[in-house]
Every structure is written in structure tokens, then in C-alpha cells.
Image 1 (cartoon, rainbow, N blue to C red):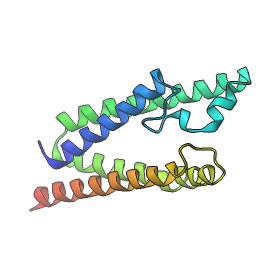
Image 2 (cartoon, rainbow, N blue to C red):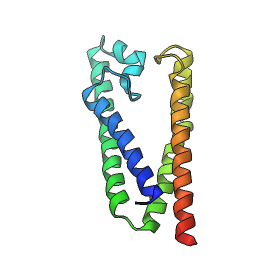
Image 3 (cartoon, rainbow, N blue to C red):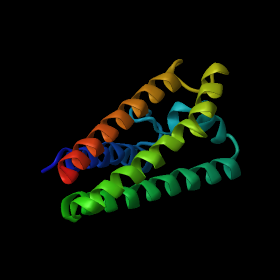
Amino acid sequence: MTALQVTLLVFALTESLSILELYFMQDRCMFNGVAMFSGWEISKEVPEVHGMVCYLVNWVAGMKLIVVGLLVVLALTAPTQTLLLVGLALFLAVASFFWRMFPLANKFDQFGFIRPKGRARTMGLMVAGLEMLLLGAVMIEAFQYFA
């Protein structure tokens, strides 16, 4: 198994933990789930809002499940050329976190809408670390493929 395959499977595992929390442990925030936002508890006071938030949380979990399923199948069966493209596509997709989600998470963190305080920074470091791991694995795979 190559470094890129292992990295894709590690990514799939970490996302699987998030999926489990989003589907089955919505009031916990171990894996950056919805409960880390103060708005989650506030939404429970208005049934229409909470219903919409629950729908969106489950929609996110479903999308993550699709991605995890595809990643596992690709990591275990795809040829090297495809794995390189998958790695690059995943790198770009994850990088979009810093474009839209991270600025919002920082703002929420500053206003005290995320707990514990500083969670946005921790998420940013985690995602940056994942990006470095992914980029490194893609580079190793590309070097071995084209050498």
C-alpha cells in the first residue's frame, strides 16, 4: 500500500468519526460536530429552526458518507494515475475550508459562538496538517510514478 493510499484511508477514517458524531451523537463535540456551536442549543428553542438545522446536519453527514465511500473504493482499487488525481482533487476541496469556513469559524470563535474558545484555531491547524500530509503523499506518489 502506498503513502497516498494510506493517507486517503486515514482521511476516510477521520471523516467517518465525524459522520458518526453528526448522525448519532449530535449533542457531543469531540470531532468538530454541530454541538460545538452555541447556536445548536439555541436552535432547540424554535422547532422550525431546529428542524432545519437537523436537516442540514444530516445532509452534511450524508455528503461526507458519499465522499468516504468513494475514497475507500478509490484508495483500494484505483490505478496510480487516478490516485494522483484523487489526491489533488481532495487537496483542493479541503483547501476550500480556508476560503469560506475558516473565516466564519474565526468570527464565531471571537464572538463566543464556538466552544471551547480557540476551537477555530485548532480546526485550522488540524486541516492545515491534513493538507500537508496529503500534499506530501501526492508528491511521494508522483515522484515514484514519474521516476
